[in-house]
Length: 332
Image 1 (cartoon, rainbow, N blue to C red):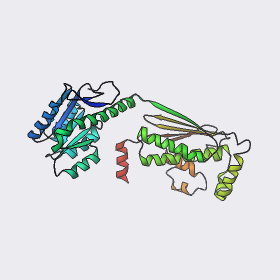
Image 2: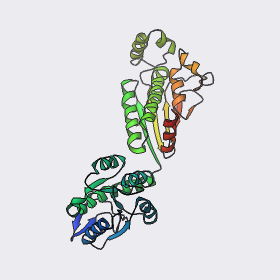
Image 3: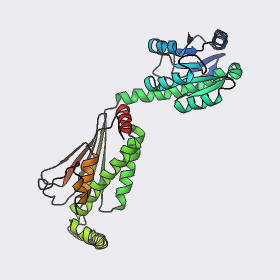
Image 4: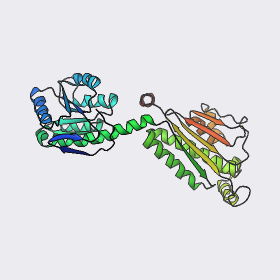
């Protein structure tokens, strides 16, 4: 049904429904009323340029069975039906068939249900009184958008890894820019949840700050605890003098399907990794005068490792599935 064509232009051609990207279009019509099924079927047949296959279901239950069997390109559904109604059908499709768009056919008095169904994942709606005038054009526009999503899904199936490298001077203002870029990328391309993005941002921020201030500029945590103002003043001074001035922080972001890997390396002398014990489950860690950054990193990341010298940290984050996130929310 889906062609290898990438263009998603759509138009009505020769009185029929034509959408670039589809050689054949399979449509499932769901309505418990025979008269309405006949009406919709007649409209579709009138617009059939020889590329439409039309199936009918009399209930939401039957529709789900046919979606599994026929893998339609699009579903047209009535809202008010006994058993699984249009709203429940939309919810089920969003969970199990998220790439099949669903168009609602709304009758008078079903506006509130239609609004909720749109929020739950329906792609569009057509009032039943306007089916003759608007159904074909609505199908064209929704199918064009759906084709774009399917191409994106095929592209995602081909993707294995993306790696980005950053080299940062000892300028703390760069940390927020890099962290924001990473969060934006993970949200847009890897669908990481907002809560996880915040935790990742905190961990990355701490790692970059540790690399700059404690690694490259060799500033002690005790100085920050005693006098933060003096700490940052000394940081500004060291940025301009040797041997600190030319030191940089190297940051590598590697995204794979199963994990996101952050590697932060400074040019300092490193620290005694074996002498640092940070237990994320120990609440007493919160009272330590130093080591706050490493405590947060170990708490928010799935795996944390250092090189032997102690000037490179590798942080691994494994994104949670939608099921795992839902379980976490129920556990709160």
